[in-house]
Length: 147
Image (cartoon, rainbow, N blue to C red):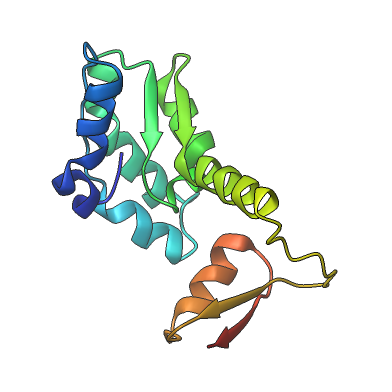
């Protein structure tokens, strides 16, 4: 499950087939999921309906692992598990990337050790809706600074 751009790129499918030659990959672009999550409606009826629609090919093919290929998709983990109706492993790419970055920063002595009450997000160009969307997803007020 990913955005249309990620699916069209084909990089993750290619890489999976290199690492696991006999793997069967079923890609599903899920364009509405990010928008619904950004608007704070992921757990609504609309969010649940989108999940039902998008996971049909996975259920029909008895898929045992689903890659959540967008930073917004982990918000839907509980709904996906409920709708799959059988044990399916959900692979959260954001968690994997965050662990990799954390290890890289630690290994290269680049960790920020200062203690702050709130996280600050630095952007090269602030977007009008970024703070609203981030607050909807993270469920707390964040500070944004342009650098």
